[in-house]
Length: 375
Image 1 (cartoon, rainbow, N blue to C red):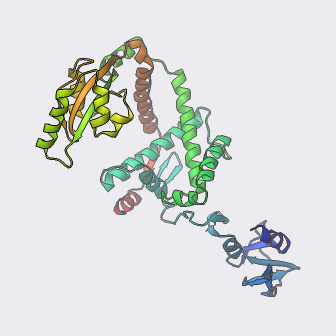
Image 2 (tube, rainbow, N blue to C red; image 1 turned 90 degrees about the horizontal axis):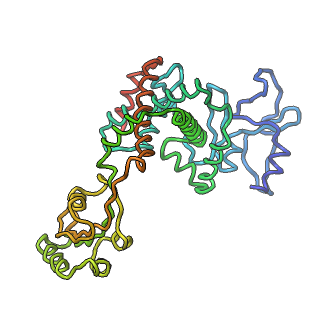
């Protein structure tokens, strides 16, 4: 593109969008022009640009110039703004721009909610997806409202942190960046704004966390409530899968292995016979907390003595022989930071509900219904 720069700088002192003149001070005047007077060549090759000459200056269409550089143009008539964008950039439609809700005057568009659905897909019905995404967008607007009231306003210009974050991924993905964003119905500007908002909410949340305290009684009650999840297990296992075998064949094979197993040779036998890659990649065992593993596997780890080999256990994956190598229960002091985080999460959600109830929130059910109807 460097070979075009001299042409652009030397010939084009003004630009048009769709052949309509744009003046810096937004005024109207009658002009005399020579239409399509200039024959334009780039490195000796003629190019077809509609053009006109006014006062010795040649004007051509902005879309033509954008196309020359492999770009596209998006015209926003509400702000009289022409944006030159990378090809593949998502261009918001009038339907995207429909206002679906306002939070004390702050606008949430149909496009915002649709992007939220695409960013956080789930297995719910379409109606549930829309309701969940709309509530998430309203909650975010509520948080931003409170952040602004507490010394964390949205910056007028993109912050260095948000710019650096977006630039990192723009560099990493190159020409694919615009296409990736478009798959979520976002463009560069929208994504940068999305990151800016999330960074601001995080700063506001962290500021509240520093000042919020909980009593010993609250912490102790939460510790008791979380007792099960504060147990950590480390276990090794040998898996014989049932996928290509009948249950009888898999059981027969696992029992043969069980007969030769001892705590001393467990690692050697696991490395040779286990059909679970994770057990081979983690010869010292897999560490997990309660609720992370499938129920039958977890139940065996809870009931078995540390250092002993349990009888084969059947799960949806096949038959397992398990040896628990460590079982650890967090003390109150060890768990205090985790408990405090859980208590703060609950408190913060309650605060959002309180802030939300005090704000003027309007929802356009017609726009909500139109989004639910889209698939």
